[in-house]
Image: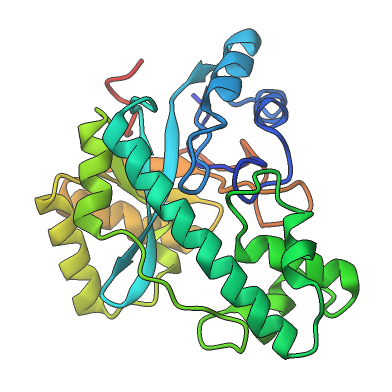
Length: 276
């Protein structure tokens, strides 16, 4: 069964509306699908309706930004009740913080001689309450300041660069609590992207499990094939369920299209094992 349980729409930093993401997933052979916008649940009804019309199994989802050990990591929540009050309140607070951060990033970029950056980024945002670094990057590419999104991050928006604004996101305990309180399953997204030391990774996995986290992404568009094997070993070592997702944002951005991932490595229990 082809599953894709991590992707984004215009409700966060993707370029396609939820229904179009659904159609692209279906066209690429996806059978089990979740839309996991950043800190936002607004796209869930449209995603579910489109998936149902296409005959796909739908799983509600969200990707929550977390600060742990001084760095940002992402926790995906799957199979949750998007109408849960505590989850909705927590994510609303996160979006408020994102708005403040976006204004500060715009100020920094304008101080570097790049005018109208907030308005420019906002023009790329399908959801005006969620303006992210990705929207600023698309604006700077459109202006011709950089030729690629990666160049924007390397020059301006990555950690420590002149346009970067550090933010204290949700705690790991809060994010897992919101997900579990909404009846969902917490998943560490693309662990191979984080720059933790081996000791910090060990601590992360232990703390995540102790707090009720249940799964990690093993096969993801953010991992090289060698990392599929590495994180399959991690899943087995800690008893985590295994998830997979393209982390799709746009047909022209990123390494992986919807439905383009290989199957999970043998010997793992899929995160969806008791959902279908």
